[in-house]
Image (cartoon, rainbow, N blue to C red):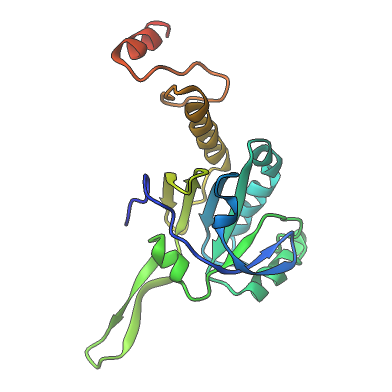
Length: 210
C-alpha cells in the first residue's frame, strides 16, 4: 500500500455525477487547486450495505465541511449510470437520494489503482490468460488534500469497516489550525482546544497544563 502523504494527489479526469443527478465529463480535483481543501474518499460499490451509511453520513455533515471551505468527493468503480440510479433511489429502497456532493466513476479502475486502494491485482495464469486476484473494487480509502494538491492525511479501511466522518472533520480542523496558526495538534485534539508550538519548550508547556 502506497503512502501518498506529502505527495501530489494523483491527477484524474473522469465522469462524475454532481448535485444528485447531473452528469459531468472530465471531472477533476484540479478545479479546487488554490481554492479549497478536499476530502476525496473511495467506497467499494453502489447499492451495497456499509457504503450508503458512510455516504449519507458525509451528506449529513456536508454543511460543516462547507463552512470549512472543504469539497467532499466520493468515488467507486461503478459507472456514472449506476451512480445516477443510486442517487435517484429513495433511502427506504436502499438508495442515497438527497446526496449532493460529486461522485466520480472509476469504471476503468485507474483512479483506484493510482491511489493504491484497489483491493486486488491483475495477473496472468499459467496459460497466459489475465486474471484478477482479490476483489475488483476499492478499499475504503480517504485522502485529505490541501489547496496545493498535496495529500496531508490518508486512511484506508478494509471492505467491512466503515469510516468515521467525525474523524475526517477533525483532521480537517487540525490541518487548518496548523496552516493558520503554525501550531501542531496533539492526540485527540478538537477544534477550539489548545494546541502547541513544535518546540521542546512548547511541548513541555502544553503537558505542564494538563
